Amino acid sequence: MVALARSREAPAWIVGAFEHPARHAPDVSTAELHHACAAGALADAGLSFADVDGYFGGRDVPGTNASWLIDYMNIRPRVIDTTDTGGCSPLAHLMHAADALASGRCNVALITLAGRPRSEGMRTGTAPRPGEPERPDSPWELAYGQTITTLYAMMAARHMHCFGTTPEQLAWVRAAMSQHAQHNPHAMYRQPVSVQDVMASPLVAPPLRRLDCCVISDGGGALVVTRPAIARSLPRPGVRLIGGGHALYGSVGGYFDLTTSGASVSGPQAFEQAGVGPRDIQYASIYDNFTVMVLMQLEALGFCAKGAGGRFVQDGKLIAGVGPLPVNTDGGGLCNNHPTNRGGITKSIEAVRQLRCEAHPAVQVKDCALALACGPGGSVSNGHGHATVILERV
Image (tube, rainbow, N blue to C red; front, side, top):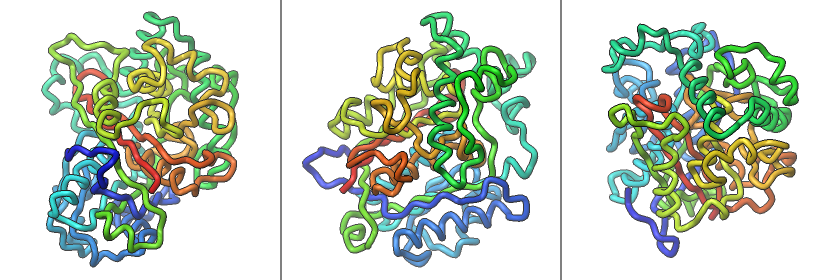
């Protein structure tokens, strides 16, 4: 990615953002969801499909490749990027769009994500994912019946063993997200829950309980990114990308640490590029597919010491207006939305809302000028990607 200094002009400004309001869309196709998200983000920016000359999307696009969706949306991009690293793909696409804008290969970049796993009856957390038999590690892994939930349960168990983290501390993450979700009219679960409620929910894969796990939802979202000159001509508040990092943090030949995520690589890259540190961040969108992943990313990003994540999140420290670091003020993937089992797009969208001061008044961070969005793709160990972006209010 093009190196950005704080004293120089950031080449990429987010000018449009849209999150689809549906969480269950049985009568809408995946292509229609993508189109609706794109139309919403473009309308938010004050632009049209005719203005788009760069398209960025991942494996969730309908068809065998992105060409079908591009034709469906009737856009004529000069740049097409379908890099896919799982749920963090839209965050990586933001960085790739910045490169394309900085090099002059496009002027208006569109990023979309959408899907219908809820309508299709997907049980991602308790059944093998599609495509897993083709993974190179599958002959040694699938025989043991692993699922995404059992993998994250192993991470949680290891974190507890190594650092004394407790199930109650994990439960504080869900409790915090639920406090935010009550103010989001589109959230799947708006009812606030207590730590005791989380602890009373059924075990899914010890030590993880049902309320430690994210939602499965339909829907999607989109972002529109432009060059600064175009952004300044538009009516919406500007949000610029000032730093980013993207890593593939795999199994390293079997010598990996189940308590460390790729945020330990992508985070320092993003902070160095932006010229800021964890103490400067006023709001954070932290991918919360499981409660333990929030702890692990907060540690890896430097918001707290390694192993101190449990203490960092307990007692409401992630709740806007209560703790020092508001996290996932839309309710996150645990309560609000996890469209097509990929949370990178919604993490970016809520960060944009905060920087525009357009979050719900009950959770809006006062004078929010600097925000972080990050998340994994896949799961820790094999096939684990991670991306972090740092956004600044203009």
